[in-house]
Amino acid sequence: MDGATTAWLLVSSALVLFMTPGLAFFYLEAWIVRATASTC
Image 1: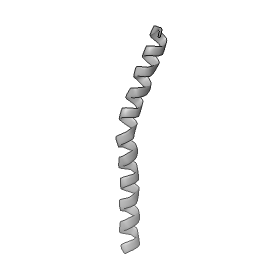
Image 2: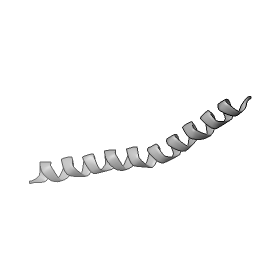
Image 3: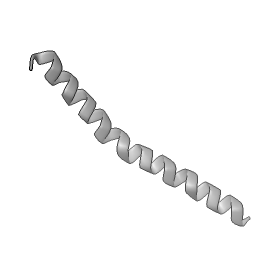
Image 4: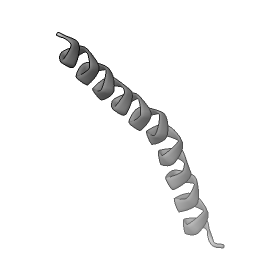
């Protein structure tokens, strides 16, 4: 592996690590909004 491949792997893995909790929080927030809207 050359330097560009290593750098791309580091960047992509960092993006995945940052995006996974953000995506989970987004779905959780959407589910909470939908749940509270259906009860009103």
